[in-house]
Amino acid sequence: MAKTLTFTCSACGAAHGKWSGRCDACGAWNTISEEAPLAAGPAKTSLGNRRGARIPLSDLSTEEAPPPRTRSGLGELDRVLGGGLVPASAILVGGDPGIGKSTLLLQAAAQFARAGLKAIYISGEEASAQVRMRARRLGLADAAVKLATETNLRNILTTLEAERPDIAIIDSIQTMWADHVESAPGSVSQVRAAAHELTTFAKRQGLSVVLVGHVTKEGQIAGPRVIEHMVDTVLYFEGERGHQFRILRAVKNRFGPAHEIGVFEMTGRGLAEVKNPSALFLGERSAPTAGSVVFAGIEGTRPLLCEIQALVSPAPQPQARRSVVGWDGSRLAMILAVLEARCGVGFAGLDVYLNVAGGLKISEPAADLAVAAALLSARENRALPADAVVFGEISLSGALRPVAQAENRLKEAVKLGFTKAIVPAGTKTGAQGGLKMAHFQDLGDVVGRFFGSAAPGADNGA
Image (cartoon, rainbow, N blue to C red; front, side, top):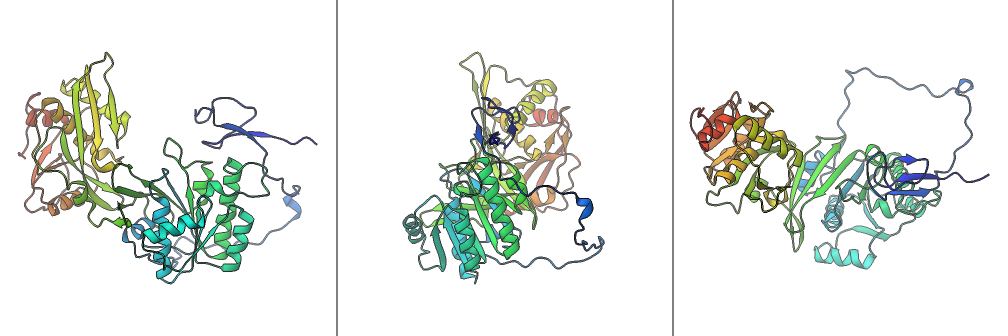
């Protein structure tokens, strides 16, 4: 019988009946490859003649004890995990090459070993000598972490079953090879099979497994998205190589809050925790500068202040440029359209550059007002007060909408010495001693109050 072949996209995992240059599901080019399907299981039988075990049921009011956790001693990592490591959990960590994933996980393995857990680190990309060299550089040579280099999945599972560790780190899932799958290592079938085997083994044996995943050029973890559904926690390790800051972000967590972040600083001795990231991101900000605005944001459960920078200059080309780093480019286009349509402030013929300082990435709509203020400040060459923070969402009508957790944002601003805040009207802030508030109904009021380009609509002044 002829072997049935499938054509699978390595970017999104979509199956195709024949090869083509572009994936119809995700639009990626040159990502479709030919591979054999997974091995066929036993012949299907009718369920009508077979009875399974009855499942115990419980009502919604049943209370269960929270899962036990082991803290690593790395406070930022424990925060992102939801309070520590949960037994029998599967964690997927993704990030750009060279960003520091292996460094972070080697430090975490050493910390968990010092906390009394049996830790095994299995590398499929580096030789044992390279991992030991990194451990000596980090001062972890004496940590009780077992090390191995292997890519054969069957050998890894046999070793883990014999050693019975509390935590196993697999670096990386794309290098694992399952000999029962007829495709090359790194293919969609291999990655899916390896992740499934490791995850089910962890649940069955009661150990925690950490899988390292490569990312695509779009910043998504390579391989089928089903991997992210298999595991309990998905973490992304973000940052720019030119910056010393690194952000560990939880995008999925069955045992804690999602979108929580941990902040680290890359040093010669590895990754160091940043206890006060707001002060770190604003550390180099001094005198008032046109185009610079401090945004009071929320990342997970943590208030975080950061600097949003804008630059507006005449466009030398007929087509003006719009360049964004650390924010959503389509949202920038929306803010520019609102400024022109609702406030009469045009950016035609002007290049616009927007940057979130420190390599941080912001996604919440509460940054709309801070971005608009930075753009106006850069266009008019007028600096906002250096001791003012800004936040608020902008609607398509130009109205300003209050955002969640305003009180926590302002408390963080007061703690760092800020005395003024520009916020939407209706923001519930509570009593913030020493903080002077300026409330505005719409974006036109802000333009008129600070930049004099529209009819003034000032509220109580900042």
